[in-house]
Image 1 (tube, rainbow, N blue to C red):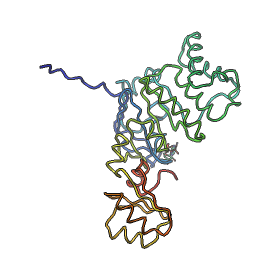
Image 2 (tube, rainbow, N blue to C red):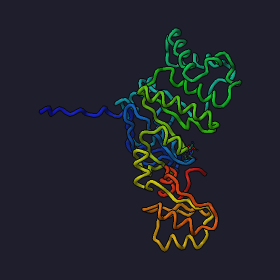
Image 3 (tube, helix red, strand yellow):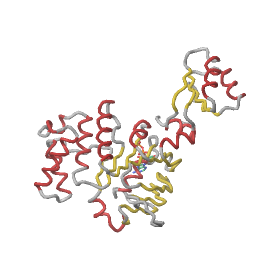
Length: 311
Ligand SMILES: Nc1ncnc2c1ncn2[C@@H]1O[C@H](COP(=O)(O)OP(=O)(O)OP(=O)(O)O)[C@@H](O)[C@H]1O
């Protein structure tokens, strides 16, 4: 019998008890997680949860107050330069040079990695094709739309052919079409085996892109796991949502001993046997604002915090 075991490849990134304080305020509090190779790992949380603060420590932009960090098996404190050479970062702000052309922005960025000029130019051309900006290569950045700028920032972050791509809210502020185009490009990168770490407060983005994620709130991790497992474990498959619930309905829900979250204008009701329950509840609603829908990561957040992800 073959007794050899195939050991899983070590994580690309491991964070141990990360902490960041600003004076007496702790923005990131005892956060530990690991990002497996080739996966997309998400940090999902509302505004102010500590997502940006956490990932800024990962790429050395902000020193840790406490904890430890290993990337590519190396301690960040001792190997920041060699680690940074293998990371691509898309910060929340575009920080492109508006007076330069699209292509010049790529070339200047390649300079930070000391890429030989012919290689830098070749990669820049390929990456601009990848993000569908080849026909805008000689336009000034200030002439681009918001979605095009985000795509350029993505292309720029790939100029050093990174082993880990870190994205802080990659689609915040974009229109739906631009968001979909960024998602498609990230999915292609995933297919190519790139390890991705992203932050987002969009649960649809997290569900679509992330193989694993952790939900953060007020600097701490609430839960961590595979998105569909988190939904099944904390909420179930479906949720009954009632708009403008009447007091009699809330009494019925309470009498039945059902779990629910009351947001005032809407109430989410959780329970087994939802089809039967839905018939019972909808027959008690005087308006037609009662729906049975698939549970989402938003419901997980709501169940755990009593608040919505979006402010
Ligand atoms: N330099 C700083 N000094 C003091 N407090 C800060 C600083 N940077 C961030 N904070 C605070 O830390 C907390 C977490 O902020 P952070 O930007 O990490 O949140 P976030 O989850 O990324 O939110 P968003 O989605 O809005 O970007 C917030 O309360 C913020 O006000």
